[in-house]
Image 1 (cartoon, one colour):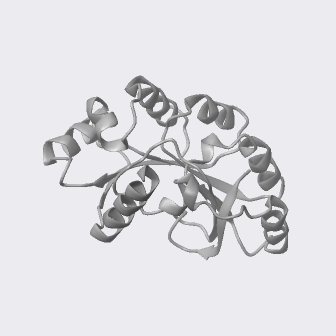
Image 2: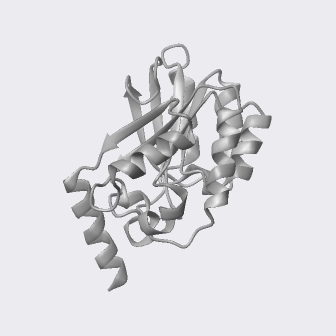
Length: 207
């Protein structure tokens, strides 16, 4: 596990639960509005936080914290994710997983092993516009498979879209909503500061 940071207390990241947040390093998308470029672009990655430091913290907070949010970056890229989630569950924590849906096989595995209690997935765009938004060539059928797994899981879930009005339209948002029957869907504002920050990181990476 490559862990880029830890928030020790949050009331907003895991609905209905007092939780901590772990940020993993690395992502396979290059979204122009990314608000965590220091977790995405290899030249910005800091030294990883030892997993045992996180586990030690979670052991100390048993009984006061209820859950752990695993976000990124993109957590499902981590080869040690399932082992990490298994250790966290053994301590009695509920786990919320944030994902971009590009590794449905990992989503399927954590569902089968009952390692996750809530899943939040970013829907970047209507499937036909995915490459335009994410900055990489990508088979949108993979995203659809992850969506289907999450919807049929029986677990609490949320889909969300960052609405960048320079590349998405109201019709795009409606199309995304329609693809999931408008259920458990949240649209969040694209913050200009985050977009400018991400753009600068992309320029630096290309130089």
